[in-house]
Length: 375
Image (cartoon, rainbow, N blue to C red; front, side, top):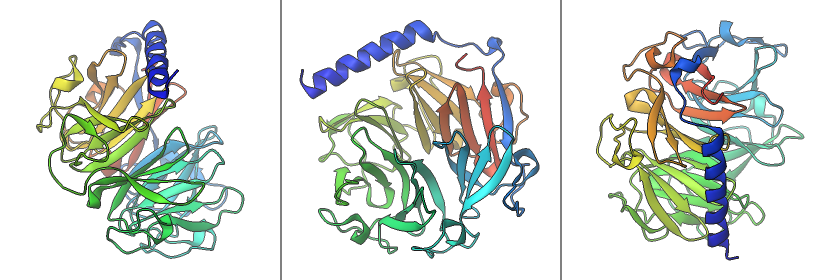
């Protein structure tokens, strides 16, 4: 069976199973949101090796968020440059990377002593290494799982566009914002300042352009990856069967990228700015500066951070229907409890794990968790 046909078959089978398992959820089923880290003001309190209670400790503009291979919750702070670890078993928060100084310093040494400049997102590879993308240093760096040592895997620290076909750590990026690993283990980078998605082969270290032409113009509804311009490729997520999902910040839309088939297709957003379309087809909905996305295997859905509308929205890939799962559409800070009345303040990150949706409510300086949504 050809790869593309097999991929479509698997996606249909997954979608059918999900529809049977996860009907459309109502908030009447006691869906709740609560703060798991942060106190609502920016700051940093030295926590030592033992850590401090996450809900008693300030955090500083959290962005990327993910569950690590150890089951802990990790998030990076744009404001401090640090990456934090929250032990979900005891709510203890510690710092695992970053010294609080905004700089591109520390390669070859321990992550805790290194400086990071505006980290936007974090990811783990299958070996447990942590990858950090830094907007203002124009690099992606790796923290080794076994030693905690930092090294640059993509970018030189200088803004620009160069290096395709050569070593990724000799190439130039411009304000990279988001990273993800595809089904083949390649590192995908939203090189937003170059209007491209770049791909690093992690075996050879070679970087290439996966999608985008470098033109900052409207993206067509469908087309080839290599021949279509990307308008603000801000955030990317992947699924296990070879797709990537790309959020366009200025394009106010979400696209599915068939990597093997070299094809992109709009699946959400009209391209117009607004906040509309809940309960209907995602293709007819409007967004306002979306800046985050996560694929959930648990309900075969995309969770989209609609940042300037201050909400989190869910797109069912089985039905194509979009709804809001967190936020009222008004800018604010909470309260925790009912997700529909909990105001958010420019959220950026989202991740789904074990039935819980984790959200970085960035300018409220909190990390929140939605429970009961997938129950």
